[in-house]
Image (cartoon, rainbow, N blue to C red):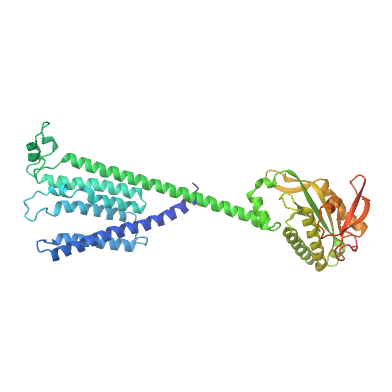
Amino acid sequence: MPERLREQALDRLGQAERNGLRLAIRCRTAATGAGLVWYIGAALVSPDFEARALSIATLLLFTTFGVMHLAIIGTQFDRWWMKYAIYAADIAGVCALFVLIPVSPSGEVPQIVAFRAYGIYYLFPLIAMACLSLSWRLVIWAGCIAVLGWWIAFLWIVADMNQVYSWGDIPLQATREDYETIFLSMNFIGVGNRIEETGLLFAGALTLALAVYRARRVFFAQIAAEVHEERERQARQRVTDLLGRYLPEAIASKLIEEPDALAPQVRYGSALVLDIADFTRFAAARHPHDVIASLDAFLADSSDIVSEQKGIVITFTGDGLLATFNTPIEIERPETMAVRAALELLSLARLSGFNIRIGIASGKIVSGNIGSSRRQAFTVYGDTVNLASRLENEGKRLGARLLIDPSTKEALSSEFTPVSLGRHTLRGFSGDREVFAVEAGDQCSKPSGNS
């Protein structure tokens, strides 16, 4: 995992750990607070119940520690070892209760009975609450302290006993009387029981620690997936924004989603070639900065018009452009969309003070990426593209601003009225070809000047 990604994951995990630790400390503080209230309440309600100052002080101290720890979690006073210390103190406190609080006020009942009457299950909630911190180390720590504390408490009590019995003192062929004498004796310490319960406790702690560890791994994997997805989204957005300068957003998005759309292919489509007439005279009469600004604005608006008709501006040719329809992105009625774009471009040119000529041809168009491994460009070529360029140039001789070929004319809808200008020889093509002008207002008038 990259270092920056790991830092991001650790920051989010640290926040989750702090939130979980707060929840765990709230739970244990609420439990000790409830125990304190119950203990005092029992002493007030029951005259036979004698409240001990040491027990009250211990419960009050543990509750206070919890409140203080909650107050400093996540602050400048917080330290990594504090959670380990407070869990060790909690577990030590529970174990101490089995040693310090007499089973019987008279003192005649051995304290070992507390291990049989109550048991190690009082320590399980503390280990379970450690899982809320999302720290597998804290869970293992709590399990180790619980096992150690339990055995210290047990051995402390056994050390003060004059006589003890355990499972090894029961005969192999034990009778009912043997069990009643040994197992039910007040001095029965059950070493085997302590081994079993602490073993199960520690196994449970290890299992919970493993579960927390796996949860953390899932967390890191999720963070990595989210970061990877965000990087891909940003990359797609950057490309979409770049393509969006020339393409409709929907088409740009489709190019991102379908990389094969830019693969080499041959597809039927329409090519549109636009050129500004008399641009040399236009530029000579103006400051270069004004020329570039006017040309940039016109070509930018032209790109928008082509995009609105679902076409794609392939390249800018100095004072013109080349656009295609139905390649590399498939659209319906490419001929109609191309002519519609051309008529709008003619209207834009009049408003911008430019005279333009446009040639449109329809047929097979070859498209794809060209270039080296470091830098590539998308381009289109073929007879259809060449024909569109020749039609644009022929418009200068015929005095027409928009010329189309027969294939385009045949596919147009009735909203257009193409006018045949006869058959003409086009440079680079054998034989004569019929050309058509599209009439729309004065759009077939002769443009002034030469390109």
